[in-house]
Image (cartoon, rainbow over all chains, first blue to last red; front, side, top):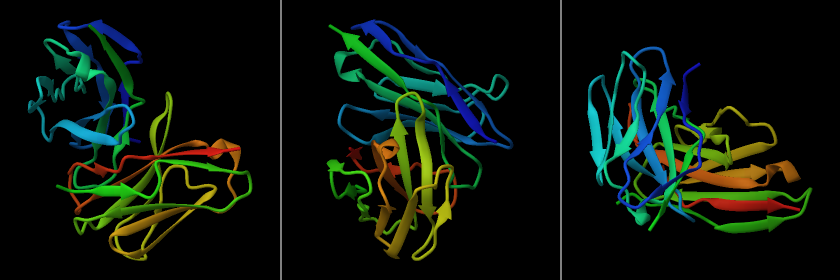
Length: 112
Length: 113
């Protein structure tokens, strides 16, 4: 079935470092792809999404590009801040379906 | 803004107790979901509902049941809590079919002793 694999954490970076969190997927058809973020003590909230191949989702300085040829949706940010410390989840939703498949999550800690 | 609320942020129950977790959304969403979140496993779908009184099993329904008597409210029930049900429980909702984002509640951290 459809699934998402993301890099294991935890990831620890210094402030202003470059961030990449890898995410690959397996799906039939053309799923939509998402990155969710979970700040300490909170539920998940949508960070960005892409609904078709070559789309780039972006928000708060984070970006991810839907790469059908490599079945990937890697999350990047050029300069992380302490406030970006959180758990990041990659997810997919099959076309025209409410089902959502989540990766295991990657904990990011940014140190000053 | 869509708001999804959960009845408790933290809950401690004893083995064998019946446990109710409540979720309410205020945006007239048709679809609601219950997940559990465990370290290294991400989110796993327990049950979902696409309409009042309708429910579908997710990936890990064993030991759980659900109730949806009103559109805005979706309850998760642990008939007889066990220690392996200690987890973070997250409720989510979405408007309709299609590849839309899910809106999440803050979560309930349940400890079963």
